[in-house]
Image (cartoon, rainbow, N blue to C red; front, side, top):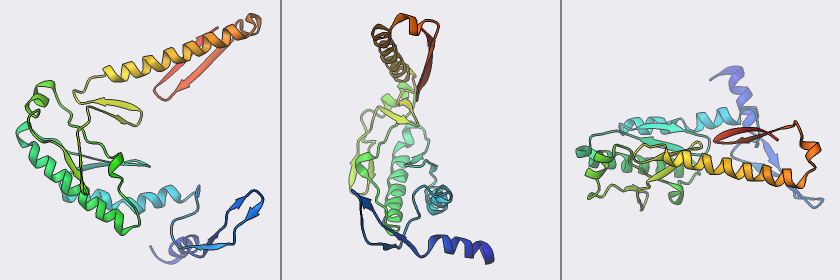
Length: 208
């Protein structure tokens, strides 16, 4: 990046000040020597540029990655007999990611890190007597049987049972709310009207 584009980014990132207002009082202005203004147009793009090194770190350990706004997923596949190789690769990769975070004023939160082995019931049974945990910094992350990924529930045996149960529970919750609303409101005002409820995992449209 050179010339006008470089000057544009430099002016956007440098010489920023910030102050806080509370109960009608303002703090003195102070210089912001890192980060960018919250809600800025370039914020998402700069976040991608800032974190793209993690992809290369994962590739160096022969591990695939998936970056989200508030988290990073590392994953690899193998046969049951090769599980220890994958476990070691993931642990080493996470160690490098933690060092990368520390060098950029970030912190890897081991308490919010989850690990799960996905496979058929027969293959998972072969791993039952082995230590399949993954090391994160100085902590050992025990395996989960269910994790949530972008609103979807992933079960170790790759079934949809948990996802269906969660959607059904949310649906019945909203239907009970509709019954309460209907009982509390005049029947005439609800006659012929449609209520549309949105849920992260489902959408319900019903006629009252």
